[in-house]
Image (cartoon, rainbow, N blue to C red; front, side, top):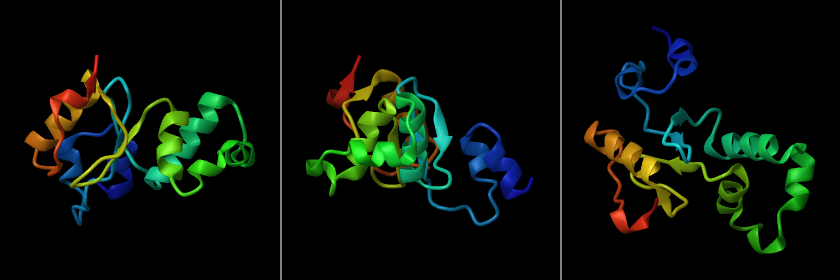
Length: 125
């Protein structure tokens, strides 16, 4: 399978490990626990989801960002996207986690793709 073919399919740890150069984990987890590749990047994924959710253009979305979030744009985007959390190999942003997000992080950790820490007390049921 080529890299483009792998990225076109739903995320799976097994397929992710088939990528030719096995990059660091860069995924997004929705509130229902679905894991997506963070393509083309975490920020661009969140921008697209926020625009879709709010029914606005990129410029309108950027204009909505309050000044207090100008230096914390990713966390603001997480809220605007509906709660998607960006995940890297050793940490994630956002929270509190839904039960489904916590379970997805646990699966990533058990699959040796996520090395970060997460606590059950961060979960929102």
